[in-house]
Length: 287
Image 1: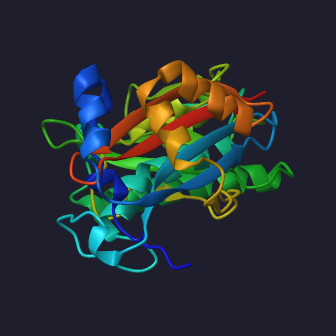
Image 2: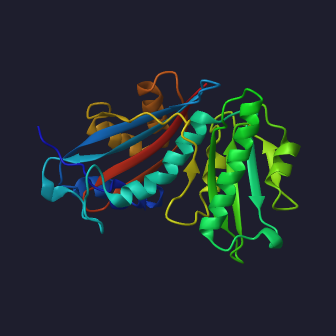
Image 3: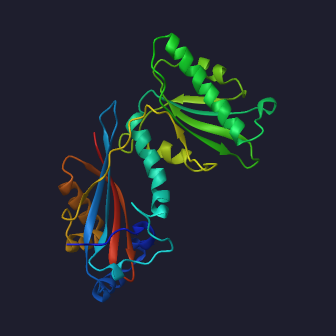
């Protein structure tokens, strides 16, 4: 059976369900004439040190007829829409952080004082790569492996550059690290302490707020990559999804039943008024 789901479902389903009154929800289901089934995409980000797993579940409609696929502003491209990739970029960064970093690693912010201010972005990135190379040379002499890192170059309201970096903390002396940068008087480094449930999601989300340039982030090659999502057309039946959309406790119950051993954290539910179908994005954790 052929179905159609190669579309930007986050754009197509951008209306928050909690804004609907009960009678509006019932009318939405009653007037919906388009038939669909629901596809579930699941991705699990397992931290390499603690073993904690942050699970993301996306539930969205697949249509029997191409004509029923919701119209969006962006044309489809394989393997998925460019716009959807754009929206998922931040989630990919969050997954990388949650998989590769944890307790005792470092969260750093470095800048440039006036006398070291780079003339352009290219020079700023060169300063950062030289800094990382100096760190790794010292680690090599001490018999330690290269650091893992993710950094984002950002600019403040006065167009002054600075960069945020999450990096390996083991074997790193913070005072020596700050001295090694040497281009600003007030670098800021601290040890990371993950949240019990969301791990490093909050920190990773923060550093994506002000990306600059074509590339959102730069990372070391020794990071463990997120797994590919597993996909299913049978995990949640259409009626079950409708009940989940209507009742938050039912949503929590169904997710914890299907993903045994995981604790429900949060979810967002959106709808499309034309298709009368729903999109659910949920997060869960297993400690």
